[in-house]
Length: 166
Image (cartoon, rainbow, N blue to C red; front, side):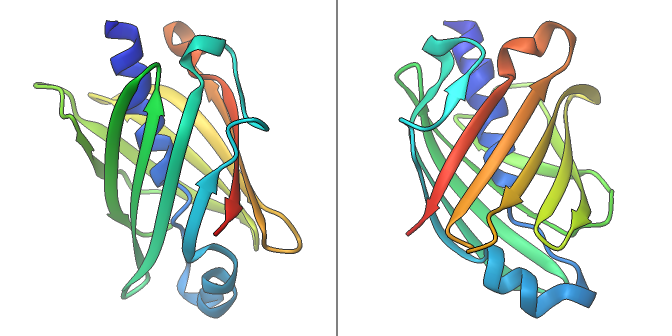
């Protein structure tokens, strides 16, 4: 069960990474990412099937000054959780607020733009890199794909999550 909770916490953190923007591409990024997204669980897959998200939603909003706010809810292995983060696409670490919180655990993310519709994210727990994620939005703006690769003992975090615009 502890692994399920860890996966849920990191999974929530990874869901938060899709809320990205840079000042130079503000309007385009808003059209591509801002809004409500729903997990397509049937199209998504996980390295460990019992750790796959069975439901999830993601809301992305412009927080102003080149920052975004993201809130997500997901169910993994029967555990429901929520994550929230406000950050910029500047390669700096930002703290993720996860509920339920785990005492003594700090999750951070840093995000960098790869292209107009793709972003790389590094996820850390207590300063240790645990996963990277590539988030891409389809050309028609209706599908968001997040490919996560777990690092070392966190290889079970590897997954591909597919979201459809609501």
